[in-house]
Amino acid sequence: MNIKKLAKKLGLSITTVSRGLGGYSDVSETTRKKIIKFAKKYNYAPNPNASNLASRKTNTLGFVIPLYGLNSNKLNQASFFEFISGMSNKINSENIQFIMKFANTIEEEKKAYDNLIKVEKVNKVILHNLKKNDPRIKFLQKNKINFVGWGRTQGRINYPWVDLDNESSTNLIMQYLFDRNHRNIAFINVDEKYNFAYQRKQGYLKFLKKNKIKFKKENYISVAYENPDQVASVIEKKILKNSKITAIICSTEYSAAGAIKACNKANKKIGIDISLITFDGNVVNFITSPSLTAINHDRKVLGSKAIEILTSETKIKNNSYYLAKPEIIERGSVLTLKKSN
Image 1 (cartoon, helix red, strand yellow):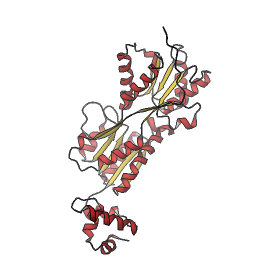
Image 2 (cartoon, one colour):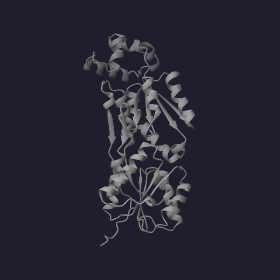
Image 3 (cartoon, one colour):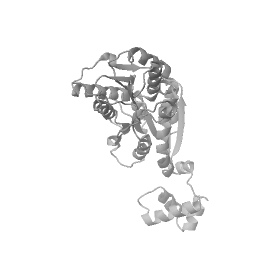
Image 4 (cartoon, helix red, strand yellow):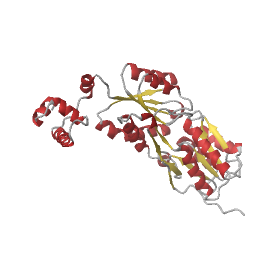
């Protein structure tokens, strides 16, 4: 079934059918529903390439997944596909072509964005893994690309974004541990050049200050490793030998996997001898023992909201954003301590 035959069956012009499927306001709701009903009945799907040629516009979304740095570990890569899963329904309903590229180095990533814009002619981009100061923002703005940041930079934000509420998440974790009488809490973070890591550190520091708990440098570690074995070694040497520490927060799933390895090696029973809580945990929960209490965000909703913002016709896009709210999932890895006098 092509659009010409579909229009003939409906007794409408090709233009009306095309605009009805595109959701244009000049086609009445009754007519639009009739067009969609017939399109489903006869298994008609618009050809995006033909639509682009006809309108002289592209309707293509580009997404670059880096497989280096934080994302060289497979535990971290899972979040991308959860996000993409959330994007899929809206991508299909909006008839958006989707181009995904992979990059193994910073240089490959730069070339991937350049290729998407200059060769593939994409007009939409999802930008992620934002650093505190990210040059990709200016690059996309200079090329007049419609984009949404999955994450935020520091300072003035003049672009649309979706993100996890990192400071609020850390505050929620700290309060959860505080309510269970933990006061010496270690935090295992990643390089703070990534803005989410910086925000999580700020949440940790602000909670300590608010509750008049002195910040101890030895309780905070920032690791650049993506290997759980390397993280385990750091935790074993710098955290577990400190008998005053009663709880560990892991900023990523690979650091959580490393913490479990370190605790097992040191014969510390999680949830009894030491408490452990992580961000996310959906992947590590299936491959490690014991299961870890975790702070969770719905990344599928983030993906869906990102496409919603990208396809919005509002003229105030720079003020468009969505902040995912966190929730604690209890799995028994945090012990309630006896209250000290």
